[in-house]
Amino acid sequence: MQLEQKIKDLEFLLRREKIENKTKIKELLYQILEIYDALQQLLRISANQSDWPAEPKEFVAQRFGLVTKKILQVLQRAGVVEINSLGQPVNYEYHEVIGENVRPDIPEGHIIEVSQEGFLYEGEVLRMAKVITSATQTH
Image (cartoon, rainbow, N blue to C red; front, top):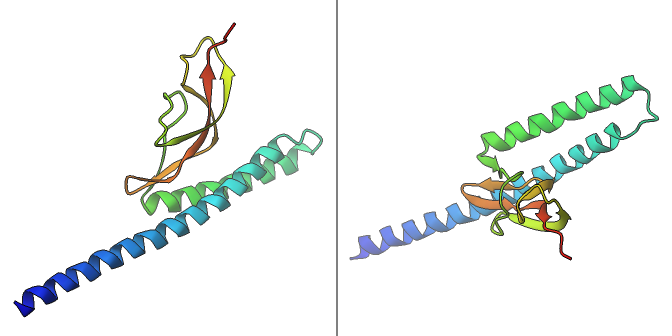
């Protein structure tokens, strides 16, 4: 009887440690995503600087593009999966709708723009995607 209790206690401790480790990993991955987002935003800003000479723009875009690609590869190797959102119907488990645009050519409630990518870790939402959906015009 005492051995069975010790086994149960050990199993409980292992489950608890696994949950704590998973929480720490998710926090770390979320922080990496924030870095990824900052670099993506810099890429968008540099792409819109029409007064910059072409060579520095290309250099910045190339370098930041490499960094964001490497971060995404690290996340993918750790088991992070990007949520495929563009063109999909909105799913409130995975998507945070931040706006709507009238698009008569696209069914209502479908995602027409992804403002911030969403990601899953071990099948759980690490971060919801921020999206803009299509809407029908009302008269």
